[in-house]
Image: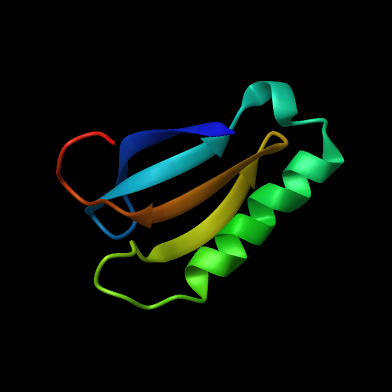
Length: 75
């Protein structure tokens, strides 16, 4: 469904994780709806073992979920 990148939020001067949907799914409306549904579901949860969603942004038709960065091993 997508890739996750480590990034720096320059406005708030913090490291974040950014999830981007797969570029091949940009034009797929069902995939786009699933991506936003995932972001809303994760943002509604508050638990120590779930990363916090900071925001959802879109740039050039590409949606991104900006979330808390948790240092550790790749799953």
